[in-house]
Amino acid sequence: MWRGRHRSGDGACAGFTLIEALIALALVAILLSAIGAVVAGNIRGTLSFERHLALVETARLILATLPHHRQLAPGDMSGEFAGHRWRVDVVPVAGGVAEPVDMSPWLPTEVTIRVQSPSGATVRIDTVQLQRKPTQ
Image 1 (cartoon, rainbow, N blue to C red):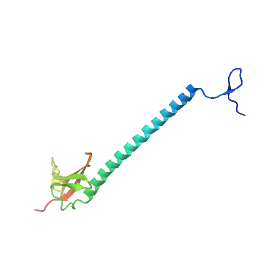
Image 2: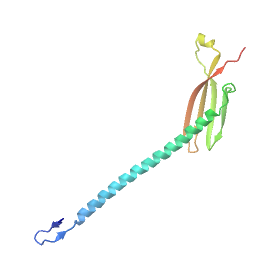
Image 3: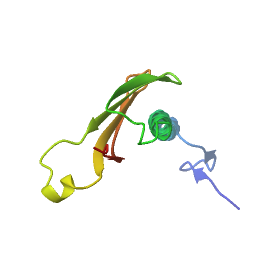
Image 4: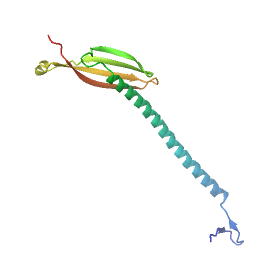
């Protein structure tokens, strides 16, 4: 059988003192606030991840719906999709091209896709596509 603390001399059971109860309540409050902070951080992280995922998926969709590389002309295109503003820049790759590469029938073209969410967050995807050089 459980026996509580006894006061000296009188034999009566004593419970927790007021100080002990306050300390226990303070510890519970600290633990609950720490758990709340962790939950709030996870929610913020999840929302941030969802916004970034929406940007990336919009950029991938734009990349997938670009004209075939044969019809993709140098220049830029822009528009809006699902509240996201986007821009595609198509530029022939410039620079010191070696002699053997000049004989290649292919022309590398740099394609840059930028997508901006309504909140202002942006994502940029750079890729290179090969286009057949025009025959002369």
